Length: 357
Image (cartoon, rainbow, N blue to C red; front, side):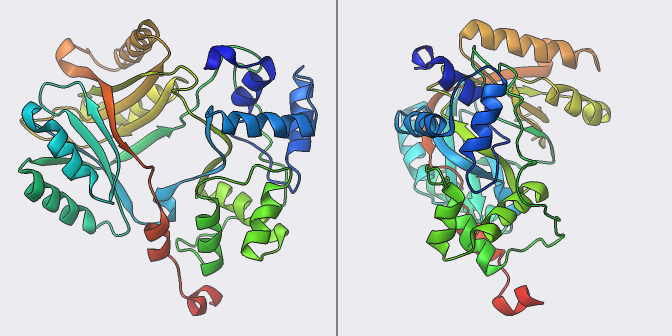
């Protein structure tokens, strides 16, 4: 689908995977920024292009990407073995759990099923995994995030603004981040209203305000403050990377010496094609890797080239051998509902009395 995109559509996808303005009529300054980069489009045309990209499936949504971890609750990555003759049965049993968000089949001689468990209470992870083990008869291997070095899944296209470096996030109201970890009831309502995206209209934030019976200035300042606090990772267009041609999804895993993990993490995170980069625990005798770096490519050759670049950067810190790493390509999406944050956010919301304190 990406090959069919017009020049202006490519510019929009590249420019606004983050940094979209949080102002009442955001398409006006966004269009100004594109014209400054040589892409002739006005606010009405920009709005129409974003609407069409969404309707055509090029975008998964438009709006604020909520950082579920900062909203409340917990999520963890889990690996397990599903016997070949029971694979679909095991997948169905795992997918029946509401707590399971994403689930992928991946190429590995033993751990061939990988899923994310998302819960409102971190203590509930163990209960969910115990139940899955009882239902499937298969052992699970919990791989919670120990350090996060990068989460920035941006997918750029050939065309205008290839660096994707338009950032209009400074526009809008002045805000002061708070140190509150919990949400107020009003903030909970806002999170639930925008978690699946903003309305695609010339005035998306006002539409949200009207839906909540709130003042638009409060909506603008709260979303902008959430961005500053990390509760929102970014505001912009969220592309469907498969529609853009990024079909090669490779999870590279590494047995990084513990004494260099803190140096390796930022170095690998600096590679712009690495979308996720974490330290996770090993499981002795089953899983020797403690470092995960996700890459995406549009062709098998591009993906292999990017994995090689990760290895070259790794080799600057220790003597990497073939036994120190692997790449697990996804072969099938078994479930992809997204991390629903309703229960997680609600569990982290103060009562009205507490919110007033």
